[in-house]
Length: 334
Image (cartoon, rainbow, N blue to C red):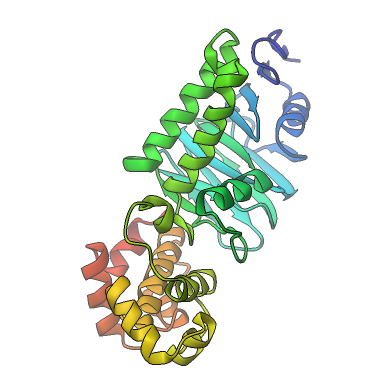
């Protein structure tokens, strides 16, 4: 039987420094801090189980520095919250809602959706992860406050987040620093006048770092504002990129004529409406190739599924946009 850290509840409200070598105790701790779960050690003889969970509840977020010492497998129901796993070392192999496995690594975090049963197939014993639970209602409300309007459709994120550079790396560093200050219990992060702005900053930062339909609008608030018809068409495409849109249908959704929509897209987006559809679908192809193993799918299969029938033109445009071939993405994706 391992020991449960005496610092449970010390420091910041909801903070916990937890240590145990008992799987049931570890499961109960994650149940209390995050989600109901089942946990099992995989190949117990390879590594001893030794859980180390440092967590802090911070308004709409739970931020944890978590490791188990041994390889484990976990199953959950629907999370009911957004969740980000950003390993500092090791890997986490995750499935959600019947989708193909995706892998969180020290270079690429995984952002999970509130809906869909979730399975953590393997949490490697050498994996120490920043694991952040984000309230779904609070994040959506924050998006509404920032855009000044109610988002249409679900707030769906791309599953991968680059944490080696740029906004992704910055957000992970920021979250770790805030959690450390809050868990210490003596810093300004625990004071309401400071805590609330920090919580908003974490939500704002995630909305700027992760890919979603409203990210471009948030990233360039001072830029030329696109007319409402253009925004309506763009939102429709990003919310349902798999739909077989036509220019006529997009014009109807935008509530303008076909000619007006085409002119507005060229002026404010720099391309035609259907070219924009193809660009969004190229992004989805890349996401799918990065999440798959080479023996699971073929480039042509994924391209065809996203509406690219001419393989030569598809490959040329893909290389032009992303600086590598589709097969190169597939080889290095997981």
